[in-house]
Length: 119
Image (cartoon, rainbow, N blue to C red; front, side, top):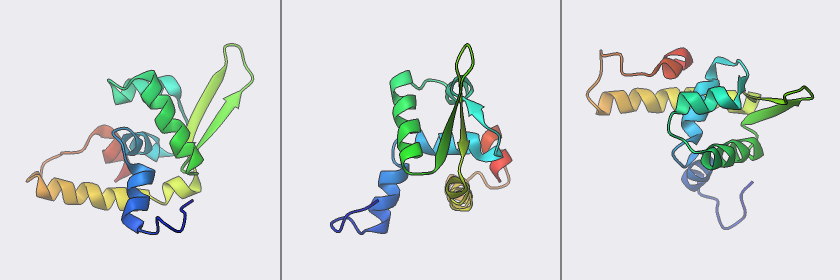
């Protein structure tokens, strides 16, 4: 997934998880229940269709989420974390715990409902 010019682990992390929407998408899918596009979009709030589609495609290309399309009328598509995607949850939990501490919110419920489910 990386070339010889980009062997820096931090650049790899930034490329994989960078952007405003990728980590929240993973957080929404953290309960290991497949979610439809409309559910993800609703939970994210003000994301545009273009940005959500782009983020979902990039996460799928990285092997972190799967996309399942059902041959129904109307068509149904669901997204879920892959085993590889589930493997990043401990890292995201640690990052969230660090952020809570740095923000001065220790002892306060500073997590959204998706993050609470993840932790």
